Length: 262
Image (cartoon, rainbow, N blue to C red; front, side, top):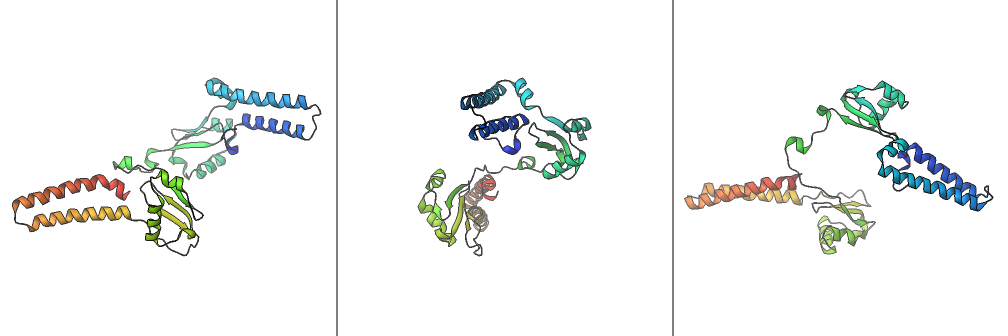
């Protein structure tokens, strides 16, 4: 099966695995008296299934013939009633599947299709899709998966190494949070280097990491100080220097803002 999920099996996969399991059951319960015949039958069916899988990888025509093709259920905002009948789907079942995708209004859907596994995927109309940072023209910092560095009170050194950190850094963070290692159920470090911990004792409140926010606030304060110095001094050369430095710092803060505040 590879990593296929049972809930997303195609009818062909379901039949193949069912037949294989039946053959195994018949052999193990000695209903098939001739073991050689039973193992030959089992081997032929397994090789046939695996071979057909490889043929499906090589040819889309064979893939569509074996596993079937997707069926369009909604196109340009219109429900395709004939295709619904083809997959034996009622209108209520379609609405139920849309609700499972957090879509409660049929008019919000631009396109929807049923995969060969029976799963329904959809595309919302452009005015109903969530706004992204790309739509707003805003730059955001890239994100990567968090690393679990503590589990059940035990430190996972491999995860720390993946983040280029060590136990010394981790102990410093725990001291700043005021928690002990034995009381931590899960500890994770995100792509920004912030440590989040979940404690066994839920009554204890852990302050949210604000390292990036503090850096941003300090940069803004430094810029404000430079502008203040430029206004207070009467030396034109010093005034120009403070103003230029304030402008440079402002440009730096603007570039760092997506990484520090988002």
